[in-house]
Image 1 (cartoon, rainbow, N blue to C red):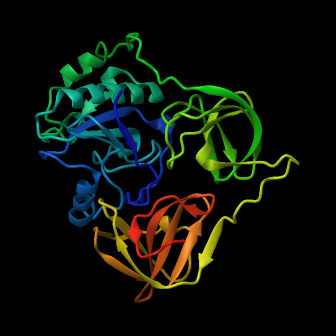
Image 2: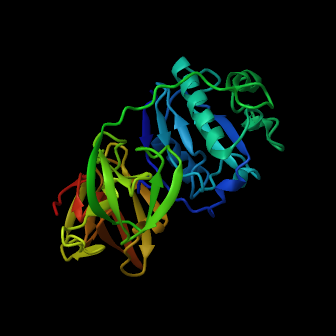
Length: 347
């Protein structure tokens, strides 16, 4: 199966700063090429931000040369793929310049079909960048879209029933333990992965009976455990905590914790980390701030305070002229940092 790296919500991804759109209003899927021999979201972000001055990237998905996929933004995010058409378009980029690998084409077909199913679209709704009005002179996507659409089904017709695609085999066990939701909004999925349909949502503090457990579901923040919600639908174990036997929630850390410490951290993440800001004072949601710059591996930041979100990220606060910058130092689960993107600090 296609390797998928889910970066949606990752603090290193720029923005999104564009207004969200209604998923029900999506009517087109756009294919792009990067017009480069290689690259990935980290390389393209430098161009989007530094050259084009964007606050949100161009694509929802990027298919790398080996066929692996980077998921960048959620469906409701308006990206900057095709001018004057973005509010109703889902954007997929294939890395290359008019020449693509067989692995990439296989991945594109899989990802396009998945998007067609989610948005109830036909092969005729899958367009190349230069097939949108006002963009006819653009060389993107560098491929024959008629041939692409022919692989997805008869042009303008209904999607034929595909050959059965092997589905992940999830090991399921009885569980029957109550859980409480530890994030603001939790999507309940039809299966144990984030690509399956959302059947309902739960709010922070809601409890449910985890009727069954899967230990080999899709990894979310390093956790492959998924729980069945009252016998219908699944949620990731990364975003819930068990309720104690006396039906009161097991003691959970507060939503945010502040540490009064100072020092210097050094970026170790290979792709770098976005420095966000500037805030006039403290904030518990640094990812809502704009991106000041991308700090590369080896760059240092002096900090004077530390914020730890219960289920999200930990941040160091950087004093700056007129306010503060914020650097994510790693993801958190139940108030603990699960991995560090910097060295020079341990919480």
